[in-house]
Image 1 (cartoon, rainbow, N blue to C red):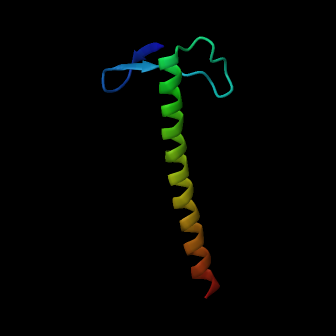
Image 2 (image 1 turned 135 degrees about the vertical axis):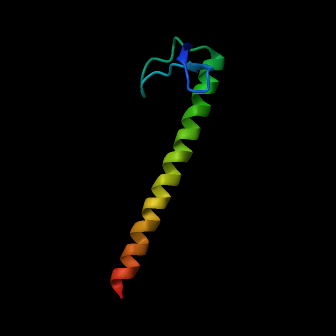
Length: 64
């Protein structure tokens, strides 16, 4: 599904809300959607790890 243009000037897909209806998406759209979700999961995991590392560092500092 193509929506408006993204910042790079290319078409930007419209993804359903999490848990939304997937019936309107083609096989290619679904494949792209899965890839986008996996990329987002990776981004969230990296941020989570960074924040957990910061908490661990602070806890170690205050245990002394």
